[in-house]
Length: 223
Figure (cartoon, rainbow, N blue to C red):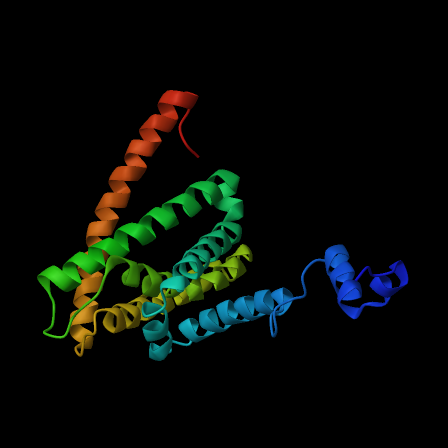
């Protein structure tokens, strides 16, 4: 049967299809991209706060969440940028850039050293961890470092750096203990100390090499 133009236009299915072609397919039930983005950001901020509060459960949570790696990197970046801004008068923009790059490099190296020392040299019977799990937990341990932006005030600089340094060290020990499933806090402290010493040696070598390259290229000493 031939349908008239009036009949086609009056067809509800035709109207619905025309609207969809003009405005695109309807959103999935319960799907709101803005709400999803807001939820992701809220989760990120909440995790940073809990990490700074030394919440052991938070470190277990990010250890088990493969999707938290980008967030952990974000924490490291924010912490290093905050430090660079806080010390901008002494380090300058160059110090901010180099410090941020070294923070990312140091995060990766320390996580690997912690993984190797904790799982190969000083494991407990129940210890099981991967490098990525250490990257996630150690990254969030940098959360207190965001407060180093307050070091921009000369009168607060030394106190801020001291307090946040100790704070991040304690967070690091908790992060390592949770990631390596340690029952002994002393063992976690030992792994952190050994890793810190080895990392310090590696970073010193890298900085010396970088400084030499900088002098060769620019013809002047780095500031």
